[in-house]
Image 1 (tube, rainbow, N blue to C red):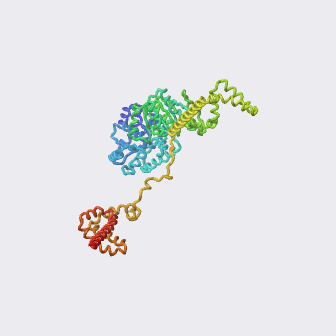
Image 2 (image 1 turned 60 degrees about the horizontal axis):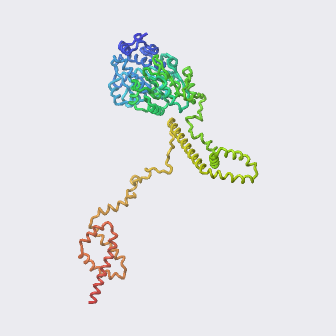
Image 3 (image 1 turned 90 degrees about the vertical axis):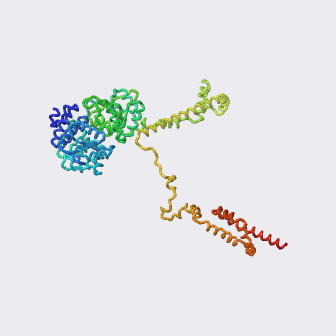
Length: 630
């Protein structure tokens, strides 16, 4: 059978021949005629069997007879990831290059305005991810009332990524009378339930049993400790003839850590996960396809549908949590009948995950070993090891040894004994057990004989003791460094935040110490603390100099009159008259300058007024006495 027997148009057959395909795959041979008959399809086939062409080719033939209208697409293809949507768009261009059909790629990470311009012109098919499609529809850039064909590709991956509610929302926006094509690499119960909900009397096409592995792929499993996984991966890459390879991790953080590690050791590697910008993801994938990058370290975002020709190896740095993901990861190699190898690095705690994978693929993954790396056994109970090498710092093993160490005086005696000749230690060693049974007077007799060698060996014993203490300190510091290094590595491996939470406690934030204006509290600005300080500087500037001249001489005179005693009242009244002309006739200009200079501080003028009055009274008394004498 060839493509001409499937009922496709001549333009499509010509484009398929240009692409180098002559014979359709089993999924294509069964799906294409049913799609051309406008039937719903429920297709299940393993990855790499040509599912994309099985719905792209008949869609082109159906859409060729019609015309697109503004903001009203005629068909929609939903994909779980941006990379897979981009790949389907490339296939659409390849197979439809002789047809005048338009497409719109609606994915995240791209300009929404540019996508809106394409929709304004009209698009025959929209290739989109669920989130961006809903966002475009809610902004009024898209109408789905004229969509007659819906394709849901990689439905099981949609389920894993949590897109099922979005798909249900999109289906509710579409017309009831439509054709739905439902494709998935696996068919769990949830996917079967959704297919029964979305499809109407579908034709089920199952090319291979679910979770079936390609026969050309060689599988290996290596069970080691968590700390040895990076070294084991580097040895495998160096030992194998790796042309290009995928390296899969379960977490995005592990992708970044492993990328830095491999790059540091001189490997040509790239990374790709969901937190990276779309431009960087597209550039990295293009370099990997062209051969500029040998190792592509990625999460499961790249495990579905990415078609890279002749991938030689797949390395599972982490055992996948879902057994179905193992099928999609290893499906990146061994495509189109080529040979490939898949290595998985597991820790003993992954026993249950490995058992689920073996049950899903109906085969046991053979075990392998590496020279120089300890091989462990899988734990199928699912319990975590307490004494793992990767989790236990080196300093914890030394606690029993510290408690079992002898006291300092005992170490001193051992050090002093080690400095004596070989014959000297033997005699005290024999006398030591006999000391308890010997009578009490025997002990003083031996004391003088032992005192002389101890005194002679005191400098040597002190030097040995200092060396032992210094070695102990070095050993403890080295142990602490190793434990800190292990703790830092453990924090790098685990996705948890070890930093303690910081609350207010005794610390008061700076924003709580800033003064609050009175206007914000509903009070007058005069209630603020800063207003009385600013008031004296503003009031003198508003007053005229005449008012100050008029008021300044009156206040000291009034106070002087109040403070003067009653007995001298007659004297001040007699002397007040001659005092005024003298002050006015003597120097009127300096008085004005003094008033201008001393306008702000008023207290010195108050004190100066009584002195002037006293001086006038003294002058008056002198003149009176002089006149009486004359």
